[in-house]
Image 1 (tube, rainbow, N blue to C red):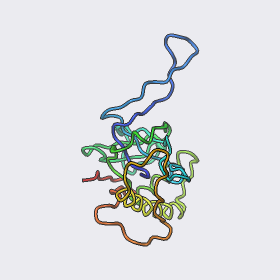
Image 2 (image 1 turned 90 degrees about the vertical axis):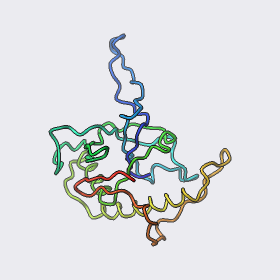
Image 3 (image 1 turned 30 degrees about the horizontal axis):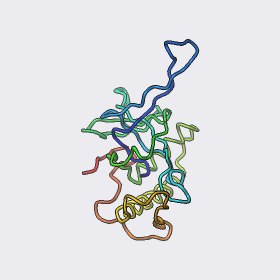
Length: 205
């Protein structure tokens, strides 16, 4: 679930002035459909309950839109955007990190269209730091954390495949796998899809 693009999910944009009443604001209706794309940017440790291990009711999603026509590789500047080249039908898209919004986790089911690789996660960490702090360095722990999350994501995928999708009301989910103690390699075709440091992405088959 970590750092994956999703399609046709409810996205709410920033509040807008109410044209009917001066000095007041209104929230726009959620955007859905084929143009409602978003990138999951919540860290796994913050996206699940520590008691039940289930996804939180809401998670943070960055809206994904078409890439500005005057921006491209090597993706310098515009730190509020995380590039996703070739995301759909070979067309470049970007995640708008400055417009992250809460989305019901239930709305993500069956909507994932791709997943960042280890290099893609490292690139996302760097872009998030540049957008929030203008911190230009790439600390070694970015790569370490990306590797840990990639392994954890593979384990969660295995666990989800072997765990019933429905449980009795108010029952806790089965305990998740222990990513820290596992050294096994992921099964064939289960690895996150490619997004390297130059931000090239390949949708899942």
